[in-house]
Image 1: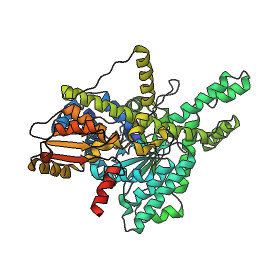
Image 2: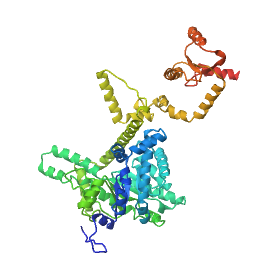
Image 3: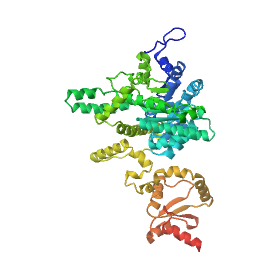
Image 4: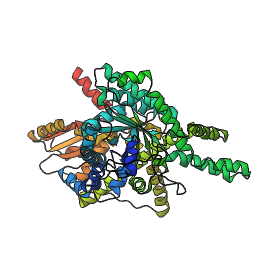
Length: 544
């Protein structure tokens, strides 16, 4: 430690208390139901070890799929109402976030809205959709209904565009997946613009908070990989020593220079105008701070990133390690020139930090999307286990060679997110022209739920007329669906019997006629498009 710090009772303070002395908060990058119900999170907060909580799809995927914490509540949810995997996940996640927010509310009040937040991420499927991100953030904000909630939005160009609008509406935002100084500047500008908009609308800017989550270890992992590749291909001792000297240095150097940019931005005249109205600075939050390289000190991304007005969100293992042997000091302002030299040397060996940051952003989005896919699959599997025989399952058998090919393609579709894209009616799965217009059948069940009342009225009208038969007239797609239903369900007691007439062949017409009672038969003219001959004739008859 660079200072001798003691408490008022002349006892040395802990490493975490030292972080608070230097102006840094520790948030826990982890959540699961048992963390809350066991009292563990309450103890971490009460003891001052943790001042906030962050979550992401990967964390929830591990919590729900990798534990039995949620099995009992899943059983209860399914008994109350059948629902899909996404709505089940959201109910579970929102309950966890609300409970954690309640535990952290005293911290939120005590620190005057600086700490005490819990983060919940918008769907990673919306990373490139500004309007949808804004709508989702509003929906989650209202669903959680806690003042100390932060909605996580990725730092994609579309996400950054959403930030200004959300801050301008008074919603706390955690901007995630930041890897470069240039992206950070855009995020900071969006935050300031959002505060200015909120203030112009009469909003109280002191009620809004934000953090910018700057990812650390992934940068070293990516750049060290490139450096090691060059080391393997190089035999010159001087060059190899130069390359080795850069290993494990890039992420911390990048963070130090980003922190310097933060200090410049939040001493500007633009910021001072907002500060006079009570605005909080958008603190930098170091994320992905667990060391992924066993050759590096396990708390290096905590010890080397300590500075005023910052947050470090750490996984439980890193928190435990820092409590055990962390050595805090005011490290962020140190060796700024050395940090500049590291980035300059990277350019000299042909490594572009900008390109790596762009790649890591896209990779991060893909990882969160994959985790969300796995999360929803895990919820669906647990739901199926609970329902058991209540679900009618279809099975198929294929010849071994064909089955292997089918399984390979199914795996590829799952891995690449194509199943999700199919459900989203994404035309780019094919030629990206008009295929999305062919996929309405995917959502037909949910769409028709909005028409239940009119359909029930039709049922009552049919029963009141005492019909004994219904003949559906149609061809192709207009008759195949009803015919499948007829073959599947057969005749329902106390309801008319359904017949399908899909031909103008006189013999088939006569055969249908012989099976029905014409005066007590309802005829339905079926047309999927509404533009075939039959409905046109009906419209002409009405005109006449």
